[in-house]
Image 1 (cartoon, rainbow, N blue to C red):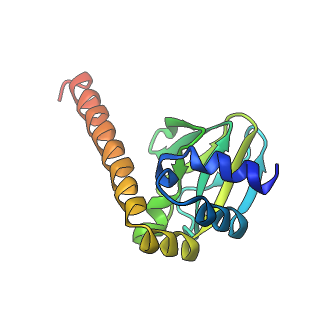
Image 2 (image 1 turned 30 degrees about the horizontal axis):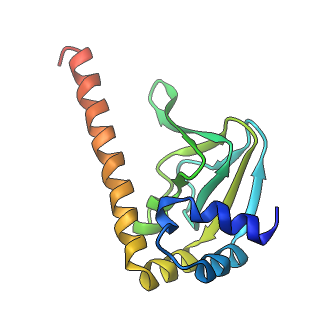
Length: 151
């Protein structure tokens, strides 16, 4: 995949939609494109979070460890971001990300990520929107689980 193709894919990600193409080109150039095969781990719950991953193609499962074993809580696909929580608040990874299909990601290190968020406040606002949507979805799922358990 050429740098131009990577830039076009990144421009489709809502987080980068309002950033000028030259800056997206720099982001693509300073980031690492990784391809994972089905079953490969992108990151593991409990590991240190040193980077976020933007999904450029394919899908991945979000898996959390529970007392009764691993539980798949979500599936992510093109234009989704993973790993941002661990680099935003400097905690261990909150879930394992496993490739469900062949998966192409752009790995963005913590330093590059924070530089982009600082330079482009609209990126920070979009990240807050993504996290808020995730929180609403998780809260609704917890409520549903609580109701199903009769609590």
